[in-house]
Image 1: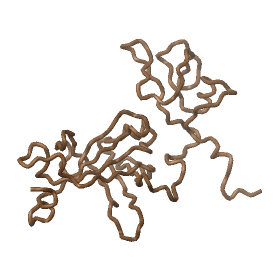
Image 2 (image 1 turned 30 degrees about the horizontal axis):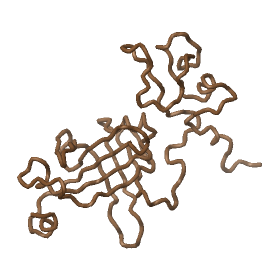
Image 3 (image 1 turned 135 degrees about the vertical axis):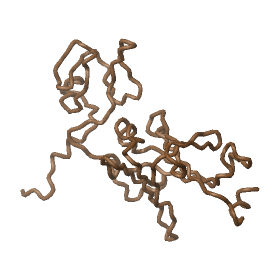
Image 4 (image 1 turned 30 degrees about the vertical axis):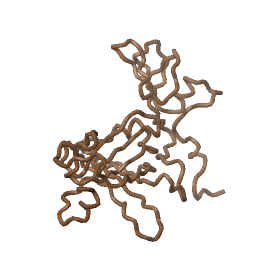
Length: 241
């Protein structure tokens, strides 16, 4: 039975939502494939891709007919730290691509009617901004790739004194620095502790994530690749003149 015929039938069966969060658009070779339609920890496969059940809620895909482009919301339970790595290591995952597939359960791999092409057209959105994070939930606002009206820049959270860029890590096994997924460009042979104290021990080289740590490594007169926004402290809303 074709997808169109299934939709029009009296008993089409359960509709399964499948999501792919792809960090390739922000230069990271990582992606998460998950589904809120199945129990957490369970797995389903469609078109050869495995999707793990996760405590995730995605809402706001509805089209209201007034021409407004939907801005869905992605909410993820933070209890299991699912996607927490994307937040901590990859700048809140802002700029990543989220693809939603909808497919009837009867067409999943391994079923008698399995069909890798029997899905509705994909819904593709971009992670625009992390809007909430606490010990229970992480929430993002999504936008269509063509929806740029009213976009606020920067998309990631503005923090004055903290740099979120991933710093190199010392690998005891390789006796060398590991630069996998590193965003900070520092690759020099000068080492500093997290408190900014110079050291000759590369195993103690840790960035304190302050602008002073950038200056210690790159020099006072250099253009610093600091990931924070120190300029936000120069203006105070409502300050008297």
